[in-house]
View 1 (cartoon, rainbow, N blue to C red):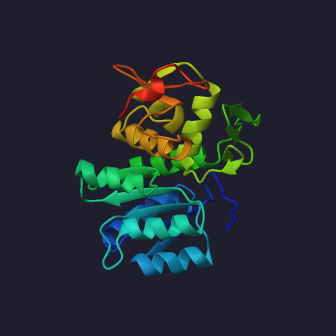
View 2: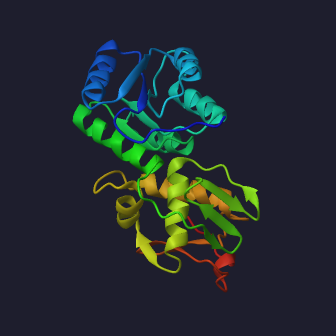
Length: 245
């Protein structure tokens, strides 16, 4: 499904939450920030509304009746690219990681600040369609990223990447051989000066799973112990023989 996404106020945001109070507060703040808001009360309702008017971003409650937010996220990802912010009362780390692993771009735990949520919506949308992004194609060791077309290839085969995975790979290709901490990656790729650093760890693991021949012994995205991660555009002797987290 080919979709044209809008990147700022005026973008369509689908809010999926079965709590009418939360839905009203979130939609009110987003509406005042200039977004076009659509509301859904459960998974099937969300999928039907997305089919009728594909959203630019989804604020998705994890604990929905019947079809939970994880399944909704999976099904939406199967239909086309869309940024997702998971919204839930469950703050357990395993829940956050599961949400990120199914493709969520951010994870906000209830109770939350509606103003912060609006800021995160703006941040995710800007990253989905960043203004002024360099358009030159990036290539290294069989990996190719076209920022203008939002396409990534490995050996000529197109990779299916989420918004954050794409941005992370493009950032790595722009800065080969340099080690970055998770804090630096969160600032440079996510645009946040705060947040759960496990978000970076999960996205690196997911990206390795898509670009590496053997994710446990990566050629490209190396762990730099005590620092963070480094992208190597060429093989590093011995690196492929070491398992990495």
